[in-house]
Length: 401
Ligand code: BGC
Image 1 (cartoon, rainbow, N blue to C red):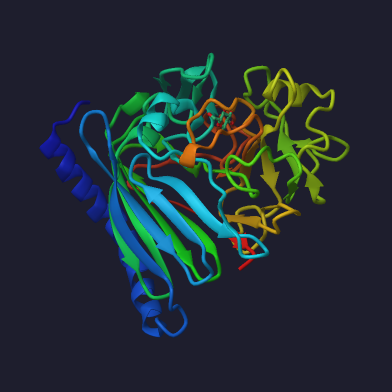
Image 2: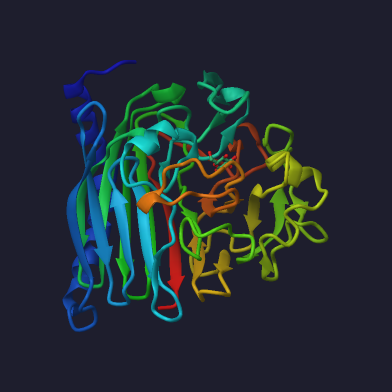
């Protein structure tokens, strides 16, 4: 089904009225309530917006700058609803940008496959053979990763300019971004309205809340694709940074990085991060899985089955940099996390402030459902029924505060 602009706008409005508006109403009540005890507790929380750049076809891309009282700041750009930078002090108060990104839109377009900082939709991670069945119908998706579809297929949500506005409640500041994805976009069924809200508070919590609604049964798996380097983006690799992933199992993959369907215990393998371990300690081990992720030198690019099981109060993962004292913790409503060590970075991406991003120059913690869930009946479902509300929350908590 193709739809014209007016129909689309009306649909977005209807979808918003039917689903998202309800959501937003619940949360805006909470926002209103929380704004009563503002300024004394939060003197330096602020959000501002400015022009970032233009896309080659002339669309304006805005940047939202979120700051807190701890000297932390986060920049979000409307191209791909991306985290463009995260400035975080170290234990001595020295600030560095710990998120890999670019100063202009062009590098994000020219290097689409890096997905730096982006919101990934409609389906984060891989769908085997670019195909899935839903309600007895087969859907074909464009393949952009060998035989598979990765991160929603080519020119997906990470390449769109999102609508945005500021949020400020006194206890948190942020930006809310919305996007409309028409029925059949990259082969996925259903007109879909999506809202992503980033907020920053004085506990150094960067909270990402996702919500979406579709007018047909469909599949969905949203995530954020920020690459962190706690020593500072462009400051070498992340091999000495220490990871803990609260997971006893992971989903091993075939040669094209599609899960075999098994949940394999991490015990006795280089995937065991149940106790904090330097990322580089076993990355070059002679291990088939590591070599599937990065055939030459090895790398991590797997989904871990989180013990936190979608409980936002339980720690899902933590990475720290002993040298700078910087740390990121992740909490999420999702059942899995893709821990990826930027195995294909090679120093050629024109990074922020002239930085070059080395091989293993960053890691991602992509909170998500398991890869290829639409084709894997034993995995938690990623189906979204028509009119049903999709909701996902992930918190990245940064230290030192
Ligand atoms: C995937 C990697 C991919 C990377 C960048 C990650 O989420 O798991 O295989 O190379 O994104 O596209």
